[in-house]
Length: 268
Length: 247
Image: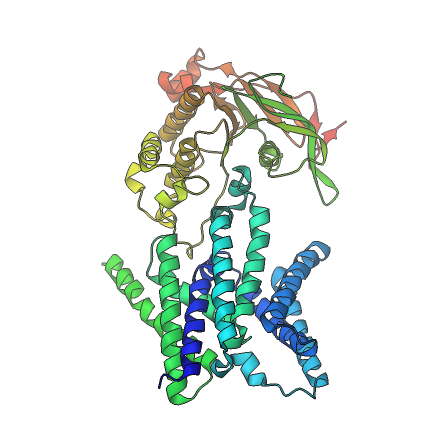
């Protein structure tokens, strides 16, 4: 049962869950789930470019995500279209460009399902190193900009007035988000990364009452989803990404129970 | 650099332009240590915009801003905290700087909401949240405190008490205060300087005491009348709907 590839997937997956916890909370607090989606759709383009120019996949995905994030900012300054329209525009056009490019690269055999939904068999020892080193860097940077980022999440003006420089930390946060997507694309797949960011944080919100508690619970429910999801994936032979997300969904439904009980008690 | 040691902020002919329309223009004001400046004016007259310039949140599109303060605290007009953010009062108090627990409790006691310290912010009423906002700003021990309609949603007696508290804080911390008042005529009597805005500075001056006026004493009671002052002013010009001066 504990084949080598499985241990590798487990170690990498847990690493991703730890990084996704705090970033996912921020995505939920800042209502950025569409933004995460856009970045992960564009990740597919990053992967195709990586194959075309034989670059490192994580690096190329990170660069493309970051470019898309910057494009979004500059588009917002140029047009009066609403943010969600711009996000949709970027998400689908980068996805389309990625798919068109895949068509051109007919000499390379692509595992499209693997790209979209993740493939645990693809996780190498080098990937584990990448996830844990890259993840640590993301968490260390996050630690240093936390106060600024968090206060700007609560109220931008207040943060700016009290010298927290929120503009700078917002920019760095965008790069960190691109980073976590780059790290997890192999495991989870381009279409489901936002799920691993959002669902554990949503579970955590249901059962926590302080920001710190929410982050800790998000990390642990992320880890639980990854571990159970990967076991299920191995046992019933399903793609790793969807299995992890389904487990997270089940945990989310369970987390609604205490909320429901609390609501009932308050009614009485 | 700073010729006057008590000067915290100086705005010289400042203005903010948004899509080729001036929101405020030609604003000059100074805030000094231990002094209270009150901004009044109708809705949309640029009070908050002016405060944001003083706080370095907004850049001025003309003129110059000199800011010598080292620690600013801000009580914004409206904050809505999303349900997705599980924020307790104590977390909120620590938002932009770490404050030790005794000082947090002390500040919350001053505004009368120490019992709410572990409550979630989104369960507070408007008035309670306003008191928490003021407590947070006080606990930071700033040298410049900017309060944007700090007593909105607070009951009348509470309003008087909070005005007294603001005056006390100003004396105790020797900080400069920029206060935006939602009332066009009543300002706190401790105010040193009142500025009436309507896209530009309409007039400015010091408030007149209403303590001596018997009809106000009847209305508010002697003690309360001592806290509030009347800023009696008539303008020598009238405005068009966009705030520009009508000839």
